[in-house]
Image (tube, rainbow, N blue to C red):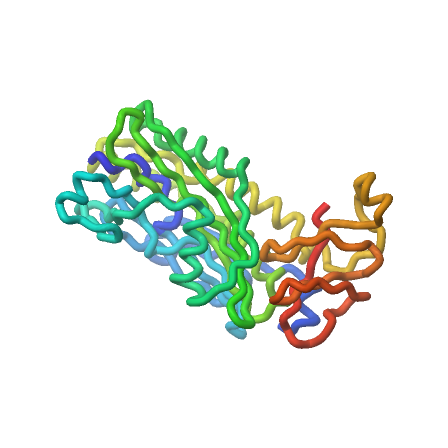
Length: 348
């Protein structure tokens, strides 16, 4: 089947305001895919966890997990079973009356006709479609290193498809505000183009995010999201069975999806190590490593958990940012109890 080149890498298939700033990392337990046993992931103990693997075709499994806090005010997810593989519309299919957004069912998988979207474009569209009807995007950044790493892993994972396939990838993080809520989405997209023309296929190997009812919960939301990404593992026995089924249907060998996701997991693990839940928001003036310029000016760079950053003076114990982007320094607690203040942390 000509459009199979990237099928095997589709990962997505599929508090109180004052207390949240210094919340301890939640205890974690293992959640196993209750449908096919295809993966395991670590989730906060006591939170509700739902998800599993849903197949849109014999060789089109889509994996996803969503977790919610006990009070329902914070949720995080990895994957989405509504998200599968995309094909860039070409003149032949358009001349046949097919339209963008149309789903083609090949019998063993489903493919949606859609122009390629970068990680930033897909994330912003996903937020509007799935998380907030009228979001205000407050941060949007793309990682060149992670994008190159993802492209290289896609090429390696699909080497059996044949030589000469060019791959472009984009990994991005987008933060948003939705009324009183705050959230962030991480997306990686990858486009495969045959060197000598032909069908262009693209997928969304990376999709994760969180939505917090109150701004002060953003640190916990990001921590849980990074935990889901860093701990997600496909089961080796399930992978072997799936490889056999795919080999029978397509004649191709499926690459190890765990290896493809290693780069994404490493980044999430680094984020966990630097998480504000492990290093609370309170910091002493002039603390931490400082550049020569900062030694003179007494400034430092701080960011919140949805990607908003600023350069501030070191003469305060804590900094917070509200929904309008106003940054305030205090000697510990948020400026007020309105619930719109996200804690900021040194980014040095």
